[in-house]
Each structure stands twice: as structure tokens, then as C-alpha cells.
Image (cartoon, rainbow, N blue to C red; front, side, top):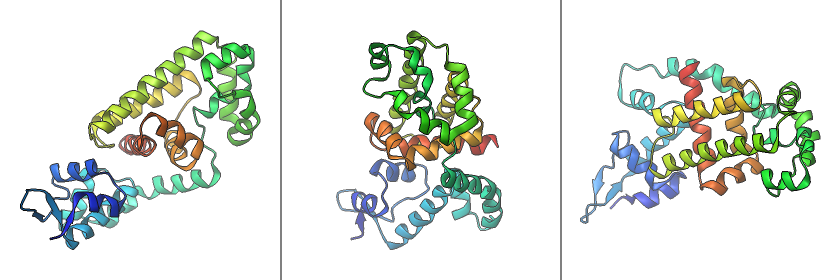
Length: 250
């Protein structure tokens, strides 16, 4: 009888929406259907899904995954070598936890020029002064650049920055809800807009730093919780969109 789409989603740790998307684009089509017309996956389908997820974890766009799996003349080694530098950078950034995070940039001393009432209005229950020392220790020059730029920010400036962040997050969540792939043009363009928001608000955000931020959203439970509060699964989606955007611009 094979496995249902829900069972496969559970096995693989992906969403049913993701499996539907893979089917729609021909990347992973189930080998059978039930009498009621529902998707049924066999063991060979699960093997293919495992390979798909392996390449996705390495940051390959879906179209390249399809080539790797279906083109007999494709050289997986060449694709892997092309990704090696980016992957090495990801590992180093995860080990050092040195990339700057825009949410951590709220946790710094420049918020001190706000009254307690204003800080609550801007940051809610989050007090940036409590995390200033951690931010400076972890991100050094990036923290100091952000501190210089934001030292003169008013309450209105912070509210504007927060509103832009909420708008970007809301549009990321809408793409996730619609089943849009993280490496789609829409998601990558929004990731680029997110990078531009950091550039305009805090510090110069290179693609290397940006991918480090994306990794932090998943690796650090504080930032994961921030995105998961917007929409479950959003932290990983934003991370993947950021990485896909960086790959196409490297």
C-alpha cells in the first residue's frame, strides 16, 4: 500500500506542503495513488527524498537538486566543490557564533537614551540594556558600528525600524503559508530586502554576515522563538531563503 503523505512528512521531518510542492515541480512524485486518489510513496520514493533533503541541507537550490538526481551527465562532485567554500564558512560561523544578529543589535547601550516607558513601547518586555555586554563581546566591531549609527535614534526611529521588520516577517510568513519554496524568486528577493533593512538600520551586512544571521535564527533558541512566534517553521524558512539568496549572489 505504501506510505501516505502524512507518514512520509513525519518520517522526514518536513511538512506536507513541502511534499506537495516537490510533487508539483516533478522533483519527487509518489509512485502510486490510493483508490481514493491520495498520494502513496514506496521505499524508492523515500530513498529519493532522502537524497533531496541531503542536497537541500547543503544549500542546493531545488532546480540543481533535480539536475543532480536526474541528469546522468551531471557531476555531483563539481556541484559539491562549488558549494564547499560557502559550507566551510557556515561551519566556522556556527562554531564562533560571531555573526551579527539584528535582534541582538537591539540589545545594546544605545537604547539607554529612551525612557523606561519608551523602551517598553518599542521593545515590549525585552530590555536591550540587559544584553549589551553580551552583544559587544560576541560581535565586536559589528556591534560598535551599530552602536555608532543608532546612538542618535529616537523612539520614532526605533518604531519605524520595528515596523519594517514586522512587515518583512509578515511577508515571509505569507510565502511560507502559500507553500512557496525558500529558494523561489519571491523568497530570495525578500531575503535581499531583509539584508537591505539591516544595512539601512544597523550596519553593513555582507552576504557572509547575512548567512550567519540565518544560521543564528535556527541555532540560537532565543532567535528561533522570535520567528516561531510569528509562524511555526519560519526560522528555518528565513534561514533557507537567506542562504539561497547568498548563493545566487556569490
